[in-house]
Length: 261
Image 1 (cartoon, rainbow, N blue to C red):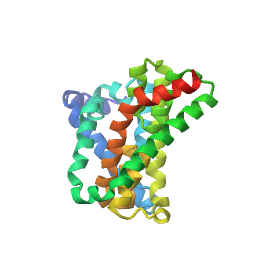
Image 2: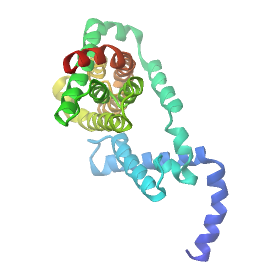
Image 3: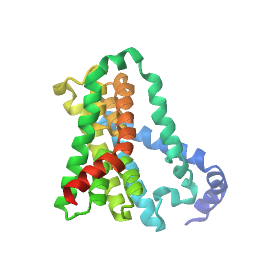
Image 4: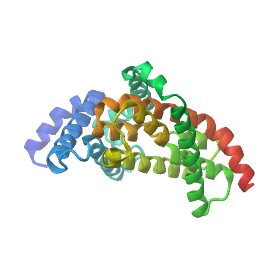
């Protein structure tokens, strides 16, 4: 490193290291700005900037983990330790709760039975698909199959279910991976299929969120489709997550155990 670059690094290091959360906000803002630019210029808006940002974030997390040998991705880099707070459960839960404030209660009530059915059907299909895929890959115990089913629901339901049932860390990691893949696919494919499934009004957005359940994927996909629909889809998707965390370690586990023994 040249003396000029070393001087600059020595000057900015105390600032970046001393204010890690502000540094994390600046980095995330830069990634979002670049992703939105790429969305407009490279995909003509067909792939939302948030979807691109998630891909970039995953790549950066992998690079950070490889460079430091740590387990928290970019958060293991001293300058970017604030990423661990910004991406932690506290900020995540705040963002999820905040989505409720954009929902008009009268529209939510109109969803009625269809919304309830979408939640039940979405959870049932997710657990069945996750358990069947797990069985196909050689898992035979009810704990692992239920945890993988929870991961197919969302990347939150999977680890919550696994922790409650005592699943191995490897199975919990696979459940998180399954949930992440689902979220990214939902985010990137929603704008493409929205016109053909009538996803253009609050009621259909709530049913859509209830069927898929992944809050981040639904929110990102709806943002790319019509940002006014985001609060409605995110609301039922949030209900999906909460309901899945209750059903996974209880009803779903008992049903799966009764089948596989």
